[in-house]
Amino acid sequence: MDGTFILILAVIAIAVILLPRILPPRGPTCNRCDGTGFVNERWPDPSQPGGWHELEGKCPKCKGKGKLRS
Ligand SMILES: [Zn+2]
Image (tube, rainbow, N blue to C red; front, side, top):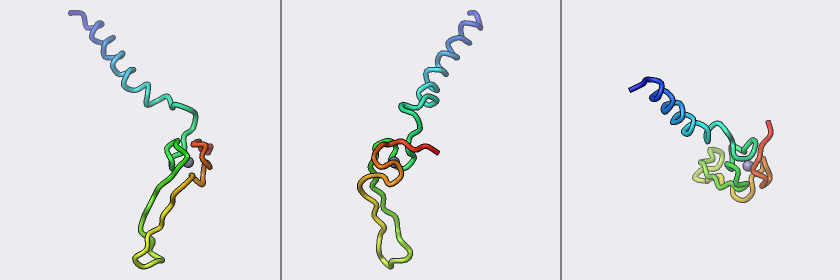
């Protein structure tokens, strides 16, 4: 068995696994709505006892476009 053949297989395997992660689908993606343009988050609000901060609807950062340029 030639070691080069195994090396080529390893490189191809790594490329197939890493390429989708390296290349984004469509430019910079919003890290809040994950490209969907909509957010639905809830987290505890210390200022309001027993209350929850709700954020629903369109993303305030990308306004529904799903992209965020920094
Ligand atoms: Zn967004």
